[in-house]
Image 1 (spheres, rainbow, N blue to C red):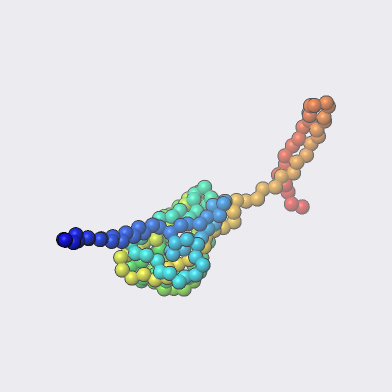
Image 2: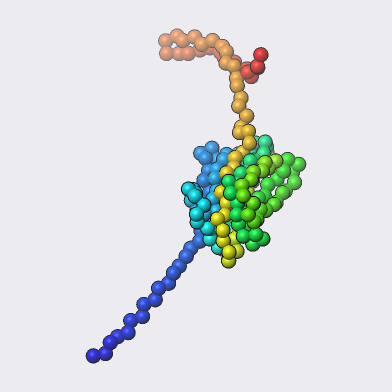
Length: 173
């Protein structure tokens, strides 16, 4: 009897997707980790061959008071893996900068112009990896609180309500 040879091939497929950006419901603050999902620790290294772009703060949610960014930790392959930040400053000039290397934790205030987005691009090469980064960000001074004073009269007769009212800006005394 002749044995039939069986060829079993195993193909390992790895699909590297960009990490998830977590935003608060009002979309004015959030968290981004280089290590997929909301991080509990920095025990896993990020993966190779990423080119991910995120809109941290949209133009709609930028009130012109700047954006705070804060890296709890930052350690990426120097010169080859980078985090780019791009925004329009308060003078209307486009600003693009990048962070690379192992610099621990740090914070920056970006003077982003009202109504313009703040974007982040996360780029890795195909070799060395590290623990990456954990970024928290928020739009400074959320939409201004407005107070009004209501006044007037309402007369109710039967099922009808008639009257007048006025709305005045609230003035501090």
